[in-house]
Every structure is written in C-alpha cells, then in structure tokens.
Image (cartoon, rainbow, N blue to C red; front, side, top):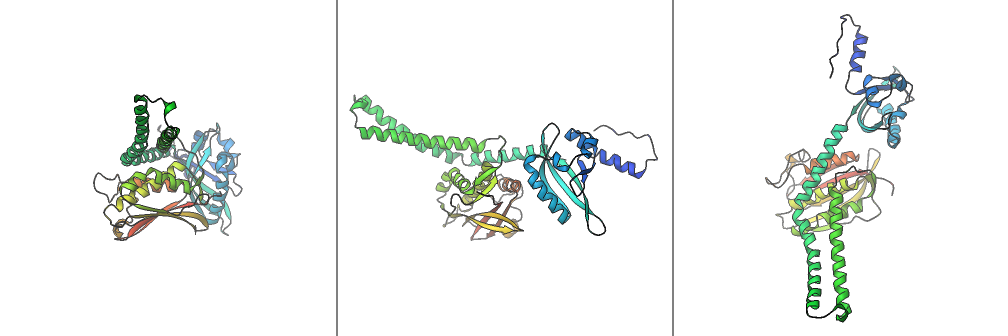
Length: 374
C-alpha cells in the first residue's frame, strides 16, 4: 500500500476522518430511505469503476447484480426494521464484473426513531470465496478417496458381467458355432447383460465426474429426493460393507430447495459415511433418512434428518463436532474437515446444520434448508 504523506499538522478532525474513510480497504457507503447513495468512499471508485460524482447520482439498486435485487429489497426492509444487517451479496462494476461482497450495515435514526439512512461496509470476498471453494473441492476429493474401495467394487461387479458374457460368446465361437447357429435366447441374454453392465459403469463414471468437478456451480431448483438418492448411490458399497440397514421415507417431487446439487450431495455423502463409521462396532446398525417441514423465525425450511444407532457423541464434544480438524475417529481414519465443510456449504444455502445425540443410543444430524417452490 502506498504511503500517505501529509505536510500539514493542523488538519481539522473532519478532514482526518475523510482521509481515513478514503483510505479504508473496503467500500463504505451510506444510502437514504429511498436507496439513493448519499456518501461513498474512494474504494468504491476503484472497485466499481465509477467516479464519485457518478455514484452519488445513483441508486443503490444500480450497483447490485440483477439476480440479487429481490434479496436486496428484503434486506433493506429488514435493516430499517431491525437496525443492523449482515449478509453476503453480489455487486456489479461498471464493466459488468460481478463482485461477491460481505455487507455489514446498520441504520441511523432521528430522535423520534424515524429511519434516516444506512451506514454500510462492503468487503470484497473474491479471494475468500476462492479459498472456500478450494476447500469444498478438496473435501469432495477426500470423500471420493474414502469411498475408493467401494467405487472399485461398483465398477468391478458390472465389469465381471461384461467379461463373463464375452467369455461365453468367445467359447461358442471357438467351438465352431457362428452366432447365426447359437440360440437366439442366449445371444439376447448376453447382449442384455452386457448393455446393462455398461450402463451401470457409465452411470457411476458420469456421477463421479460430476461430483468431483471443480467448476463453478450455479444455484438451481433441487429435489432433495434426488440428493438423498445420489448420496446413497455414492455410499452404497460402504453401507453394504458395514452391513447397515437403510430406511428412507423421502418421496420424489415434494421437497424442493434452491441450491447447488453437487454441494448438497456432498453434505449428505459426509453424513451417511459418518453414520456408517459410527455404527461399525454396534450390533444394531440402522440408518434412517427423513425430511419434514419446519418453520423458524417465519422462514419455512425442509429439515433433513440423518439418524444412526451408533455409540453417540459425548455431551462435551457436541459443541466441537463442526470445528475444523476435530474428529472422534481413530488417527488416520478422518480429516476432521467433513462436518466443518458441510456446515459451510449449508450456510451458503442460507440453512443450518444441527446435531443431537445420546451416548449409547445414536446420533441425528439435521440439515435445514429454506423451502423453494416446486
């Protein structure tokens, strides 16, 4: 950062305050009751590409991306009512560049309690989001690594069918029987088995490619039934190897949220995998997944519960399970990042993840996500 040189020693306090604001590393702005910008600092000029005079003639709605304007209106109303507001949003520079920001705002009122204006700090979080996305992607790769043996088994089973069918056909040809002389039923059976096996391998390969991809993901309507089904598909071999009985009452076409399918699946993959690990030494190994509606503070959520019959989590550890690098697993069997990453993903979806547990009886993780129209 370049040095700021001042030759005068008798600078008024107001000027010092103005210098401080202009050299602040984040955007500082104030808008009136109608959303018109009445103050903006120099950082806004550098980040958005507008001159200060241009910005002072604009409404706040003109510097936000179109896709967040509805949320902006709701947030502005909440701010006027509650007095403070913190949220992540998306602003738009003069050249169209989208910039993710963290916004901290509070309201200013007159002596009669009438709202006058806001005072807000907008922090550019592009670097933070890149680091966060990298951590999420690393978590995905770690999940695939933990499931690697199961994935190999899922590929090997259909591959065995292909090889066996090919072997039968090869033997028939070596015995001097051309395909035209073989029973039609046999040929159809081999062809059907090969086709089914190849589709299974293709489905797994496509799913792994999609799950592990690092490209940017857009928010879309997500049926939580599909998320649960995909997570169980990914963890199928682990569930079978652990001899876990799965009960899922989630029905298709009922539970919609807005989100990134792969990221939500990552949360469920982690929770199902943890549940299997928790029941490894238990006689009863039941995994139950259920989704119910729940309303909190006026917001309608879908609450997805993942329950196991494991040994439970000691009360003194319940507050730590979502902390990075905390794990109750044996050394070498867990990174301690899965639940931390899962909480971050759920938070990005404006949701919550909670846990309740009883030692010796089991644990339930609840993922709450805002409902969306089907």
